[in-house]
Length: 294
Image 1 (spheres, rainbow, N blue to C red):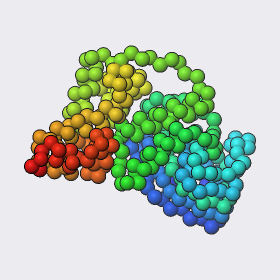
Image 2: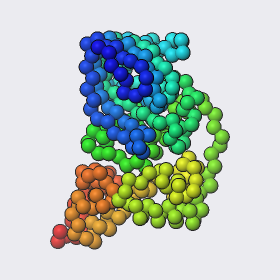
Image 3: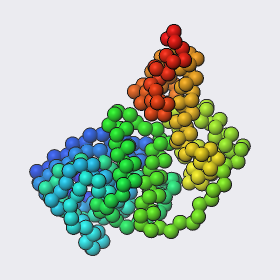
Image 4: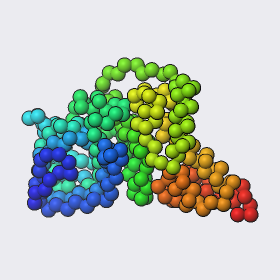
């Protein structure tokens, strides 16, 4: 059978093919897309060019052979294994063959126009097939774990995770970077950002929004915000949500589900797991400790 790839131009011709999408989630107007699925086939031939950068983690399974070439050159001839990382820059054609495929994988699609640290350099990087990087694998596994529970992580968290992956790819490809500025945000700028977070705590706040409030580029803002507060922007927003949750749990009788939605969590279970992870106690138990009659 022959079918079109998820994005871009090309075709995949497969024999004995079975593809099972498990989950797909997007953020920032589909500038970042996470896709997790299983794929089995006896043999597949592909020719594919995508408009987005693609990063793939092989979660489990294997192939008996994976052969990839690009721009008329042989790039890889080996096997897929659990933990392998593949990176395909936007606009780069992949031509290849997969044999005896039985894989579970997670794919992160990134729009090359995305204004995040490291994104502009990705187009200059070389194609990587079945490389190893424990940090990138860990970040993608954490995103997979969150979405597998039915949670949709916040945009600011996904932007931070995506930026870390892109910067790591740049480092692994020996991209030389200018030394980053380390000056913290000014007090008035930091105050504006804090006010914005406080006013929009129930919304899906993005890193791009916060940088715009500060009147800065995203990469400069993220560095200088951390220099000023000791926290990455996504961690600061999360801490603010939990701090406000403590106030509401201890000072009101609002239902925990209502508190979760009010503070921008995707569900009560997402709020509960996050609160427990950061405070070491479940929200209901926290409330019981501070309001015994509840």
